[in-house]
Image: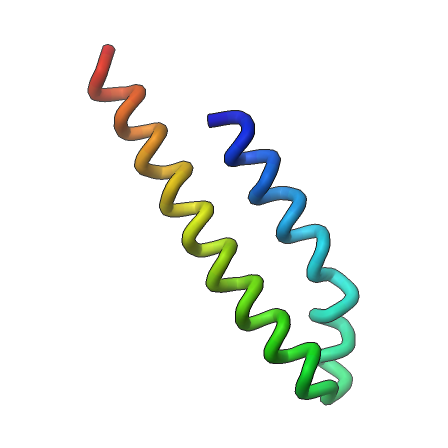
Length: 58
């Protein structure tokens, strides 16, 4: 569970530059941010499932 959380934090911090570029109108950076946000969503969902599994196994 901690590993997935660390991956999630790392992914979010890795797109900081692209978010700023996208805000300035860089379309390619916007595409990269959208893809990364989909990855964030998937990792967050995985983390959520693991937390629920741990809770239910107790």
